[in-house]
Length: 251
Image (cartoon, rainbow, N blue to C red):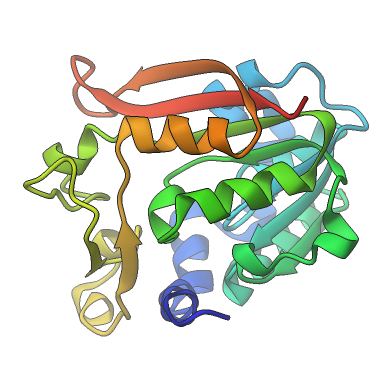
């Protein structure tokens, strides 16, 4: 595992299971919500799935299973790839409470076993701020391409690069230069929501933020055919972009 992945792993395994229980509910409580309306739990991402039943989905950096479990409830065959053992524990407990099967591989995304998982999936799906954890977006996109079957679809939703300079008080630290390629350390995503004494002790993550053109060109240069690039409004201010979703096909 590369050094910055080790650093990010430490951050994502610090008090993480307890955080999910406190903020998302016990696994049984979370499963109850997922079972009640799994499409609603997928939020806007449901629009990017043509069907669910029997579809093999690779959920990249799938965290605590917040989207993987609803997909499994809807009939998808889901494998989560994530760096955190704490995330795995919570996700599998939610899946068990929801009475669905979920495969969870704890690994560095750049070291996924392609002999086992190459050309395996119908859909590669990620959301919630993923790309900035990887210092080489081209290497990352090549892995995504390799995971898909021919004709498979990548659904890549992430923070909008506009947030690179605007920032967000809760999730994203701003930079002064939109075109900066600097690698820097910052708090992990849920640090602002934990008690201050815990927050002070949490390990930092290593980040590299990308521009719109870097993201789009990396998708294309990896061999994908880009089909859509949608922009979504910010959570707090609908007049500015907060996220994007890119849909690309392996042809």
